[in-house]
Image 1 (cartoon, rainbow, N blue to C red):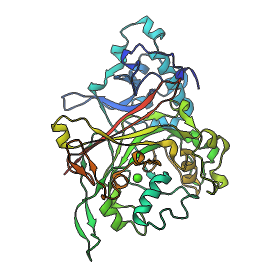
Image 2 (tube, rainbow, N blue to C red):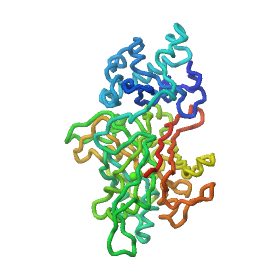
Image 3 (cartoon, helix red, strand yellow):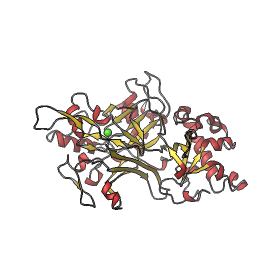
Image 4 (tube, rainbow, N blue to C red):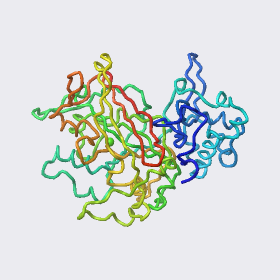
Length: 439
Ligand code: CA
């Protein structure tokens, strides 16, 4: 840890003090352009969140405030995605973070010299249109919560909920990068084949079992060459940061199509990504040991074992899901929290997932997205999707309006939130990942 984590460091950006997500200790990266009414909006470029504002990194660079590696990253700041910055590697990301933190600190020399520097480099978040922060060439979705895998498995195979490979191999599938969408993009209810249990043949039409999946995304920073696996001890240096991911799922389509090759159209119509990527550097104070394995479980194979990863390779991040129906919003009822899970409960660490992904020689590239799979835990309140919460619709949720939900209805809004907090450390958050179901 370094001075950027100092809990006593404050910012001249007053809204950053006590901000639940974006204090000066966080500084997540995003991409924005100014909202305006013209047909020719200003180009998108990189920023960091600080309190209720975004810090325009290009403007900081133009002011001449960056030096060394951070100064050399100037061209990457003007790009409409994080990818060019990701390719520059951890030393550059760290230099930008440290220099941005120093600039934003209450004792900043630039601020002492000019108390109005915020006019040049800050944009109120209300005036910033946030876009997808990175261009993912490839998207992989894991299945790393043993609680999710067991709960879902029990619904479909009561006698054999967890398949025998689960505790040996980080299970995943190759997802669809083209339908990754930024937060606030409406999610159109997909049409697909679904077969009722009593029917002989499927029908084609709108999904009747639309669900969310609360996940965390791991954004790849540095690439590895084709044919060059990343050893687990190096895997952390290939990861840039974490974001929120909602892997929307059509359960009726999924249950008909998934055998023998796994998810396909049930999960490729939209996957919502949060606008902010919280760096591994910002999450350094929230590292915790890998979740202990129950006695009798196998030890990971050597290529998935690293003492440092076992000691501090998991992240104590809490993921919440908040739901509101159109009627709740019309009646001005507050959204209800329907799930709260812990990323640290996953059976596999991010480094194990990345090492496994490359172990056969697959190359990962800057901006590739690896998602955790639904983050669920041991208790009912930890279940990260409706399939688990309602036991496949058998036990519907009851909303404050008296409405019930087995699966999502049109007009439902799903908001994911994430945060990390610990005694003696300033809490950092992920902002929101929002999607509303439409037709
Ligand atoms: Ca998923």
